[in-house]
Image (tube, rainbow, N blue to C red; front, side, top):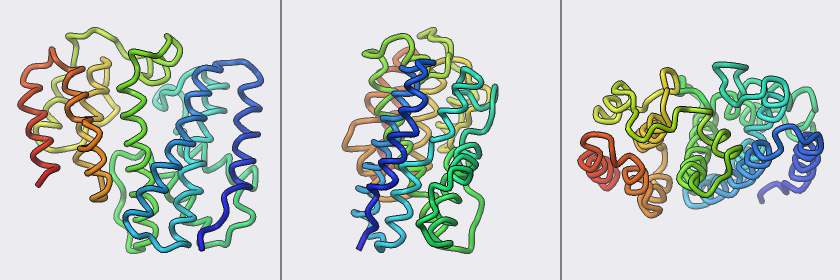
Length: 255
């Protein structure tokens, strides 16, 4: 039977509200609060459809809810969500969880799974692990996080200026601008990296490359069903060869 998350949800709600009450960057932090709740729902869907055993699924769900708690003190202190200009938010999330003793009711193995997944959720690549449960916990969090980030990003036209800043890290909105290195990574079926991003189009290309870093069949199916490749390509209409690249991604995921 899956562990009840009510206690963690109550803690998270109070924790987030403490930062929102200050009024500093409220729109940005509301976006992050809502993101954490949606990643939890994405994770629940993935663990259910992929048949995770209950104890592992429970730890994964806790990690999904808590994975970005470091974003709140990060933004309060530095005024940015860009890790390169501030601090590694995943490491800060884990440190916050430990300091607040949020996982006191979980056994040592569950705590290890949760913290491992959180610390690694923003890495470009996962390190090899001989422990299957640790790998699964990290992989499912990364997939759930990506699936929601794409949804947020594709809705940016309806955002106000503050939310666009949060979603795109203050990148240059020039519709013609893009970085050839990130485009090349997608062409070569590799996941791009945050380093060197300059334009909003680079972020679109980065998330398109995430199609090659989805770990589960359910994740790939949802990416396809939601039309993410199509919608990202539509936002990249001025990038050379984007329609052909879209077809490549769709074909690769279909196969």
